[in-house]
Amino acid sequence: MFEEKCLKKTLAFDGDYLKLRKDFVELCDGTKGVREFIKAFDASCVVALDEFENIIMVKQYRYAQKQELLEIPAGGLEKGENPLDGAKRELLEETGYGTQNWEKLAVTVPTAASTQKLHIFLARDVKKIGPQNLDEGELLEVVKVPYKKVLEEVLKGEILDSKTIVGILKYELLKN
Image (cartoon, rainbow, N blue to C red; front, side, top):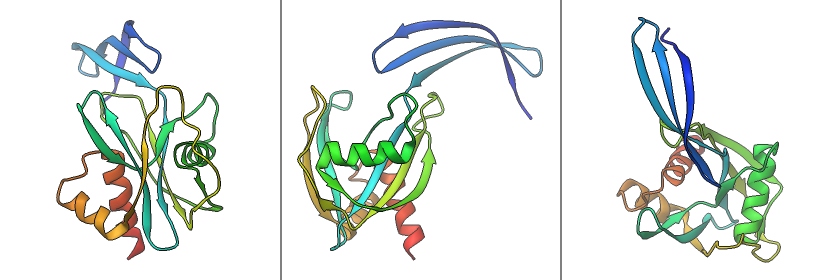
């Protein structure tokens, strides 16, 4: 198995949401290398289905992409928070929806250059149970989209968000 030994850790950037690390490593064959990666909070994501097989999604402007993206609800976990509890909290905060019917779909990493793990859950029979409670600076629109339309948009490459693509495709594979 290939492993790498960290010789020196350096912090290249220390932000509120992420940190950029530059580590100097020794590979298993004795050669030296540099590894740059993002340290970010783990997050929970929710494929939320109502009783009519609509997906509750959020549309928000993503500055890095310079466009609005259609996504499943998601957000960073608070320190020590269980991923399922984080999924329940994020679904309620971002959409005002909730349910008692939860199932784990997947755990994925957004990129190999990040420490972040995305915990993707399925929430069935969601209902509106309260108002949105968005974080400061968070602007998003809640939209209900028929599941078949979301799947079609994923397959056509119209939905770009990776957590949404993984969640929808995993649900599609498991439901059949």
